[in-house]
Amino acid sequence: MNHQEGGTEQVIRCMLAMQRHPWEQGVCMQALYEADRPELWLPMAYDAIKRISADGRLAMVGGGAAVSDPAACGEVCLRAYEKTGDGFYRTGAERMLDYLMHRAPRTKDGIICHNEISFEEGFSAKQLWIDGLYMVPPFLAVMGRVREAAEQITGYTRHLFDPETGLFFHIVDTEQGRFVRKKRWATGNGWALLGLIRTAEEAQKQGDGEIAAPLIDQYRKLLSALLRYQLSDGRFHDILDDPTSFVDGTSAMMTAAAIWRGIDDGFLPAEYIVYAERAFQTVTGTIDGIGLIHQVCGCPDFTAEGTSAEAQASYVMAAAWRSRCGDGNSSINHL
Image (cartoon, rainbow, N blue to C red; front, side, top):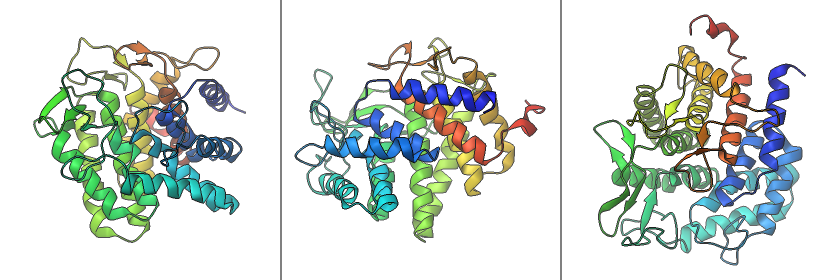
C-alpha cells in the first residue's frame, strides 16, 4: 500500500466513525460505491433500508423533516440489489422512489422541496436548497426517471441560478419568492456540479442524448464558473465571492471529483486535471494523523470551518476518480 492509499484508508475509517444524518449516510455510501468498496457500501445500504421511515424515506434515524436528503442513499440501494439479487434492496430503492414521486411536498411548479418544515422564522416550508440537486435527480435517473430528473434540475435552475456569475444561490422560499440564504455557497455549488454530472451520465447510459447533451453543457458551464473563483492552492472561499469567508476544502474535493469524472466520461479534455490535482494535493495536506480532514465547511450547521462526513466522502470520491484517470503525477509539472 502506497502513502496515498494509506491516507485514503485513514479518511475512510474516520468517515465511518462519524455520526450521520440521511444525506451524510447517502454521500458516504456513494463515495464507497465509487471507490469500489462493496464490503463497506453493502452494509451501509442495508442499514439505510432498515432505518427507512413509514413513508419510504431512507436512513431516517430518529425521524426528522428531511425530504430530499434521504434520496442520496437511493442509488447505492439499487446497486446493492444489482450486485446481490436480494429483493430487500430493490424494495428499499422503490419505496424511496415512490415517496419522491407521490408523497414528497413540492413547489407549485412541481419541484421536490428540501424539508417538510422551515428552519428560518418568517419563511415557508416550500424551500429549495441547491443541495437537493445532488440528492434527488441522480437517484431519479438511475431508477429510470430521467425526464423527471431533468425537470427537477430545470426547476432548481429556474429558482436558484444566478445568471450574473453562472453559479447557484443556496436557499429560496418559493412561496414568498424571496431568498432564505442568497449566498453563492461553495459546497452548494459542489453538490450541484456532482448532481449534474451523475444525472448526465445516467441519461447518456440510457441512450437519451436529448436530455444528456444539455446536462453536460450545464455541467461544463457551472464548472467554468466555479473555476473562476478557485484559489491558487486549488480550494475556494466558503462563500465563493466573499474573500473574507474561510477557505474550504469540501467544495474543492467535490469539484476535483467532478473534473476527474468528467475526463473519464469524455466530457472534459485532460488539461482540466491541473485544477483537480492542485486541490487534491492541498487538501491531502490538511488530513491529520487519524484521517480527519480539516479546513472544511463544518457540521453541524455548515456556517463555519470545522470537519464533516461529507468532506471525508468528497475526498474519497476524488481519490477514486483520480485513480481511474491516473494519479495526476504527469500534471504536477504544470501546476
